[in-house]
Structure formats: C-alpha cells, structure tokens
Length: 98
Image (cartoon, rainbow, N blue to C red; front, side, top):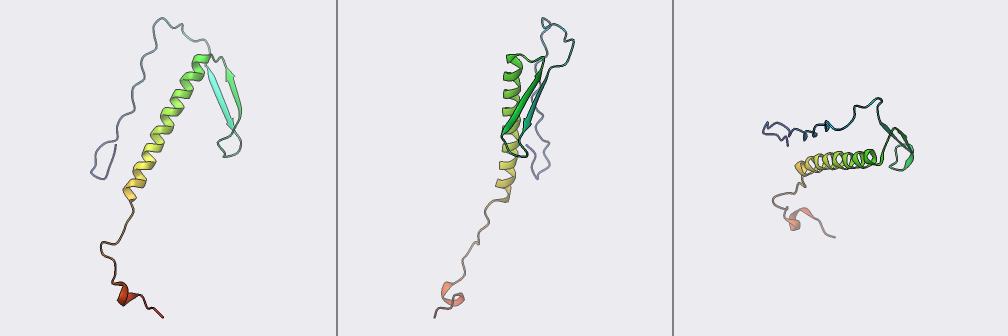
C-alpha cells in the first residue's frame, strides 16, 4: 500500500504462465458485459469463443479487482477519519438558555 510516508504501492500478483499443454489460440476469446445505463444491472452478456472456464476466470478476476478497488476506497476514507474536538466548549458559557 502507498501512504503519505512515501512507500511504493504493492505490485499486483503475477499471473501464472500458460501451460505448454494448452494449444495455441487461433482467435481471441471475448466476453462482453453490457450494463443498463450506469446501474449495476446487467443487460446482456455476449461471448465469442468462450468456455465455462472463461466465465469462471472472468468472475474471479472481477471479484479480485472489485475487492482491490474497495480496499483502496476504504483506506482513503479511513485516512480522512472522523475529526472531533479534543475538548468541548463550556456549555454554560456558550449556550444561552431562555
């Protein structure tokens, strides 16, 4: 993680190499997800040359990326913190009562 002390951000994990037993692809595999507007509702999922393994791999990668983004957001929010006064003012002198 990076912070105000100048440390470098963590490098993303390296993906394992593709097995030599896997045949060389002739075309790309594509998975296209279309959402409705800017909502999280999925309208369509299109695929080209996909197998069930591609769906599982894409799902796991999306979960990983989502968690990474959420952790960074949480870290930024925690850095802001909730600021409170160290000492409350004297109520009798500052609050006028009828």
